[in-house]
Image (cartoon, rainbow, N blue to C red; front, side):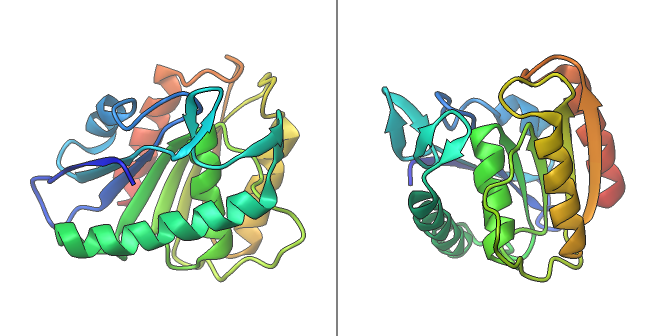
Length: 201
């Protein structure tokens, strides 16, 4: 997978896995990672699916309707890539914190829905519920921050609340923060996520 790896100042810090939104790339969230933890290593990945020329992490059938078969395949592919990257760059595979926006947040959530040990935690900006009707792995010990919009036209508030409940039932420690700027990734939610991160990690 096309990616950027930047080694941090401390091996004790988590590795931040950056996952962009639709139409983004591996450069989009680098500045955000610096805000969250400038000392951490960064692994920023580009989605391999193209939708009208725009990179994504998995296919969708329509707005808000995921191609579930492709989602499962791409989640498995990303998880395997993380295994390989940890060996190649010599970072702790068990100490990865995902930071995802929109489509990137959805694939990060999907990692947690399918693999109990894929992520130590996640900051999910405007995520949706990746799958329904499945039993999640045990997520005890995982911490998740959800930034959601009360007036988000793409990801309704009820969707964020359902994701919160689903992850919490699986054992994750989940925090949700509400904004009123639609689907936008705002400075204020990044600051809230940074405060949360500094307390958790």
